[in-house]
Image 1 (tube, rainbow, N blue to C red):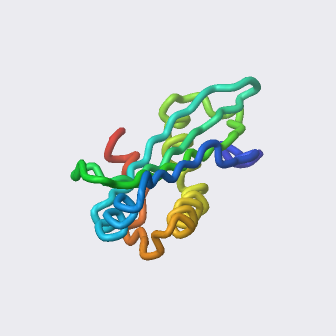
Image 2: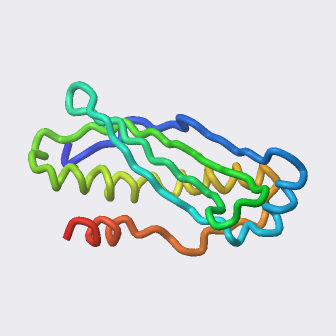
Length: 140
């Protein structure tokens, strides 16, 4: 293995699209531009230098308590870490930055497809997530 990690597999662990009623659907459709994308990343060590990384994308309206919809995708990645990786900061970068950069385009497509299939056809994520910048801002 020449890289510091290898993604062995990934899958949709959980997917949720909740629109409780017609009023919520109409409200969400009219106010979808107020929805925000949140990303949460967690990891769990497994045996043999394997790590399960769960990346959660939530698309929700936090600012208005009126009737609204909620969308979430949890995407699991099974990653093998190279034996050469010893430093905690290197491992953090792999989990929070490198793997995310690799999987995010597919994960974003899954979320957009779910939104379209749920009746919200005009959703686009104009601003791309820069995991390197987020990582450097947090740890440097």
